[in-house]
Length: 357
Image 1 (cartoon, one colour):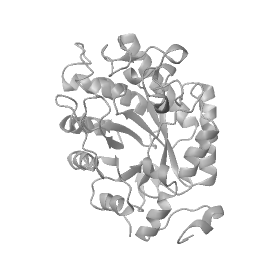
Image 2: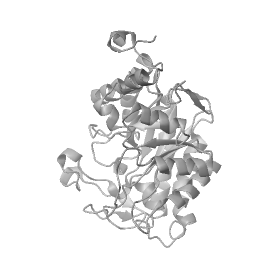
Image 3: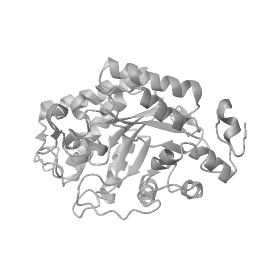
Image 4: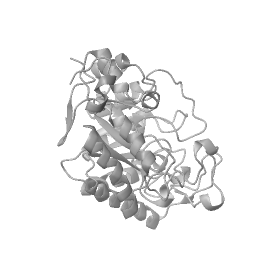
């Protein structure tokens, strides 16, 4: 039996396989609101039968967005717009669905990649915040957060959790990776505070752990809560795998159900050796050291590659992004290659190479 297509349960949620549609920013919202693009985008990925589909980075405040065209969950209008997407996935697929709650910190107020991806200007620009007033390469210098600013961000994350529950989402993933706000606190490259939130590893972990605790306290006990981290900055003197393992231990103590293990994104000086499954060793190391459920992502394209990752115990879930963009029916191809069953809508049954009801 295929390990990739075996079921797994976290708290009270059952996932029918280990395949995840990774969060992918679409830069296509207005005032943080999802629209027809989001229905089609996430909907057609869900139609091929992954165990879980995750909304793109869904920001907890307007100023926390990467660009002013990013998805949000900070208003009633945002909530109602996302509900349309959730309704489609619920009606027509069996995939579980989750949100990736995020705050961009100093990597906010930018332009979409197809417009250069640099610092925004004019009406598209807004003030950014960070643990320290240190700019990301080529971006605006952020305002260092004071106690009031930290408290506002805690409240913003907490407010997004009941909205996620009203949307009947199955899980939440907190975005603590890729150089965004929580990662900025974790890394000594971006956090040069001298108070209780900077300096030692314990202090640098403090605010991200406070965010986790605050969301876990208001998120239903029977639903899993996870975290995406960058396992390393890929820069000497930056955040590293050993620190990620310590952080993972702390998250597990607090009731974290899974860690989505990625890497990089904090510094333009990063030197990444990209290759097939290049981040899998990070997931394996964290899983072996802590026993926590992990998700791996990055340059995973082949079904047998994904099967081997799960079968070897390197990760419990495999997440794909570009693989789904190139082939929205990747799950069907994987099922055919591995001799497994996969969900297929009745309307599309004739399109499967091998149809198993």
